[in-house]
Length: 259
Image 1 (cartoon, rainbow, N blue to C red):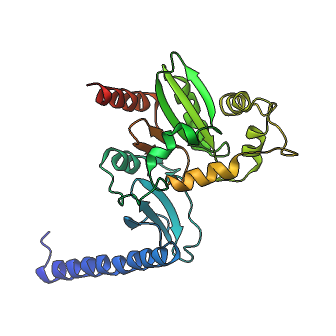
Image 2 (cartoon, helix red, strand yellow):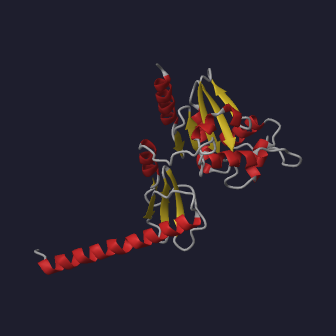
Image 3 (cartoon, rainbow, N blue to C red):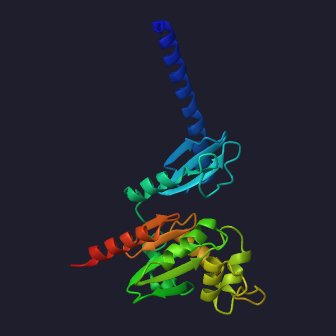
């Protein structure tokens, strides 16, 4: 069946109009975000399949925001329960493999991502050594974060690495306080995250905990979501990754260090 030319032209005009109408909404959300968070660089704003919900990128970090109120940013992933597909995972993988453009650090250490691997700032970290521990990895993690919980079994598979876990209360203080106020915080962490066993958690009463210091460090190095992994070269991965991906990055960093 041959479609009249004037109908094709009308369809093209309608499509062009709909595309043109979509952009202002995204620009409006970006403008509102920029006003609300002037210190943050928003590299991309895009519609999601959910009406009124926008996907917001800050270099390699993704969040979601409502077009009704940009005050609240939701960090996580968008999952289609009909197709059982993680809609965010492929985009995260592309963002993490691409070169990240970041503003030049100001004088002094506050904006230097190498802070995350500086031993002066790891005194409050939970330390786990696998094998000879010759490689180093810093992980900002929240025990209330489901992707952090998924990450722990992957970390357990990686050999010859020392993992410094910095506990941050991005999703509330109850579980983080239970961990850092435990008699043996590292054991309490692994029991909770690997075995779903909260029996070793402590109570905050009289606890001189490091959560405020951990939050300050997260802010200094630009961590906005958990989990976030830092490697010895200062590079990072935001979000859940497999043991194979972690191993590949650790091996790559080690190879770069060789003369």
